[in-house]
Length: 80
Image (cartoon, rainbow, N blue to C red):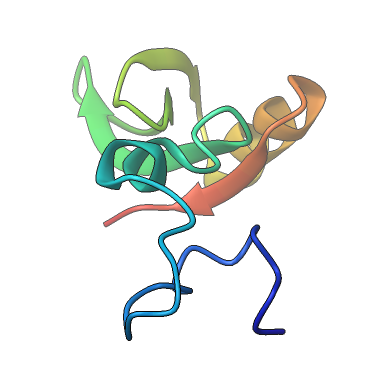
């Protein structure tokens, strides 16, 4: 949709700029949470972080971390 201002890629070919680089970097940041495998006290865990990388919780499995993200109102994404 060429006139859809919610599309951040409009403007790349000279039509018009729809958002700044800063806005693009923050786009969706309030909606997503990342699940990152890690080790805590010698045990494998999955750390739940916000889009900026700040920890929000720890799950014993990927599934528990996903459930926690959903319970907090975030879209869970797995990070490697």
